[in-house]
Image (cartoon, rainbow over all chains, first blue to last red; front, side):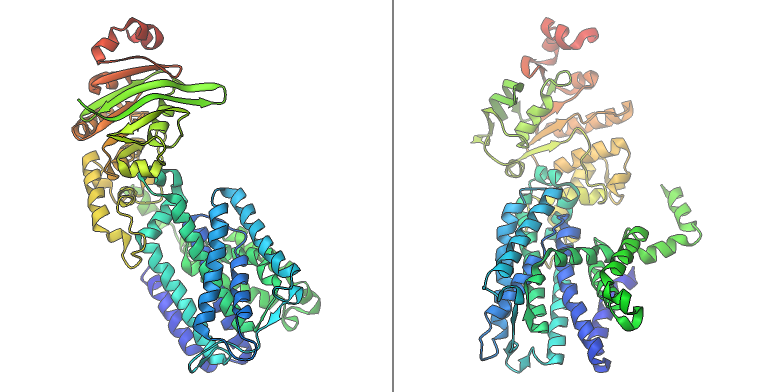
Length: 327
Length: 248
């Protein structure tokens, strides 16, 4: 347990030192993983902490990314704090709208309604000239703040790392706070929470808006990283992928969300690299990735985070016997 | 005795079925008011309406001087109406203590104080500790609630209800499925609680009802057919025919 406590700190220290010895390819990959980790963490707040399974989370990522690009001036680099705030606020606002309407439903209906709202946002960008239509738009000059230039590789790296550390710390604090405990109560038994006097709708809406805002943060980072946005960012594929990430990593743990993002990106990278799996297979990476994820989920229902526990359980069942006697 | 909770002409219809019809009752501080009746008599519907889980089709509900008929359940809970459930609706994966602490938190939510550790929240922690003591669950505080015995879960239901610091307790069959010893212990708990609360007790265990209730209301098909002291109920011919049967 103590090791689990220090694990995030070890990871943070390693990530701080990492850029020193990375090839450009690896550098790019690590940044991508960190951005998607922020995205996965934002969904974990909904699915793992509050019990709300949303299949439209990419809408907030996409809106954050589009707002970043659309509000950037043509000829000069934009001011980073302004663009960041606008991206987060726009995503939060859309989350407030979607949440206020969709939280009236439960279970599979909630899944469908969030998906519908995400598709709505997708087609706004896909079918109108607002954001360049299906082609998307480029962000030629990356946002700056004084000496910080998010277009510089190393600056971007630490900006993304800072955002990931912020998101992780915020959610870790939230989890142990009264707000987090109330969300956990809602996940387990919402009716009982209402009977105790909690306005559960307000709690769920607050969680939904915060999750949307954090996804907007991930969208901002993605736009700055790629210098390019297109409607596919809001597609249900993205919403499904981020859901797969947290399932793969293990729902119910912040570390699981990060681990899931790492595993998802690496697996995708592995299966789509011709040099590693051959041309024919690399072309159909969706197939191999899909099969692998099915296998993972079937073999590890608790996700990758449950792996050490399974290993321990394989050892002679001495501990289990002790526990049985204590009961 | 002045009534703490009152309902007047309370009615609930489900389509063509009238589950509760024109029920007017008083619940006074310091009294256990039992509501008895066969299955389907409308007892649980009555509790659901009083607690706010179910909207009334007609009539009104008064808590003290406030008309709470239109209030949401959370608002009524914060105003002092606590309830327990017929089927245990605890948080099985949380500890017994956390079950109570979480309920106590509702009155002091402070959700924005993110830097504060909920597990060390003193206000809610103290209330939970007191509720566990009152129900005799203190020794099991650290156990996951799902591992409690059936009787333990029923006690926890009450403890969670108490943790919201209610003035009115709406207890839906707290003795269901309990053995004789557990029933005795639960009745002791209820006796202790009686002084500071108005208690509505829905219960099938007639023996227990007559031991503890100061007033008994008998419902049949959604209507009140008698409401009086236990002795008068025992001798009420209509009640004997309609409900007590062999007990009379």
